Length: 126
Image 1 (cartoon, rainbow, N blue to C red):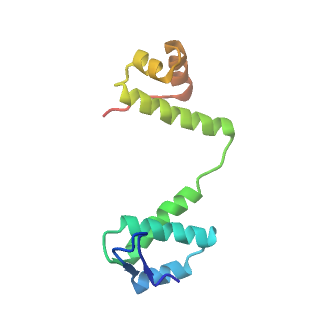
Image 2 (cartoon, rainbow, N blue to C red; image 1 turned 120 degrees about the horizontal axis):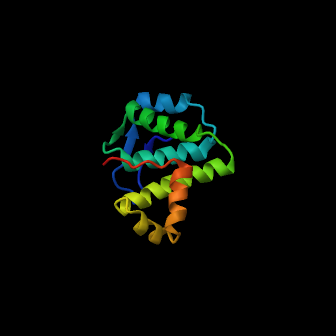
């Protein structure tokens, strides 16, 4: 078990509270050592205290578990989800100007309109 954890440069040695150790020891690790190691690396970087507490572990475990439970669905649905997110990002970066966004994406303006309708993209109010 990790008694002390530290970044690659060896500075800012961190330890785990007894409650944090208990949570780690009792957690089901479907990814085995790799998953535990990834969590420890993340904690070293994100926690700004010398002693990592139970709350720090729980916050990060929730994030990991949510990511692991992400539903697997058809490739078409996954591609559409990615395309929608990417198009929204491009639209935001171009102030929702369709012509400019289409140019950046290197597609025809009419094709971008079809994608927006097909994917159900709605203007996000900033």
